[in-house]
Length: 64
Ligand SMILES: [Zn+2]
Image 1: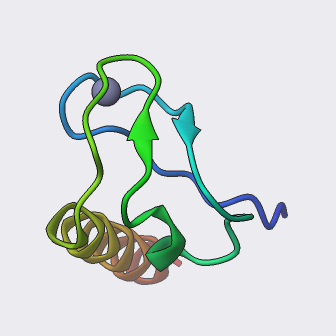
Image 2: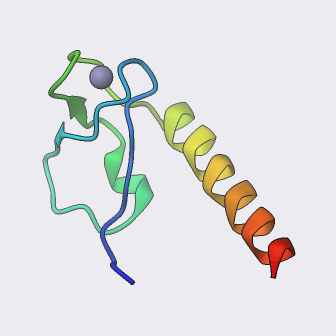
Image 3: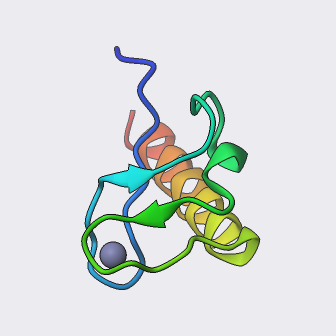
């Protein structure tokens, strides 16, 4: 299992971002700029992504 945090752009689904600091948590993507379309990631985008991840974890847990 890898510790790399995956975040995909809500606009172009790109996964490469320009970030000011080293990304350790999902929250660190706040203000990151997508290299694909230039979109700036907002706190709202992060919350949506966090909710998506939480849903996926629950679904995976229920499958076991
Ligand atoms: Zn993008």
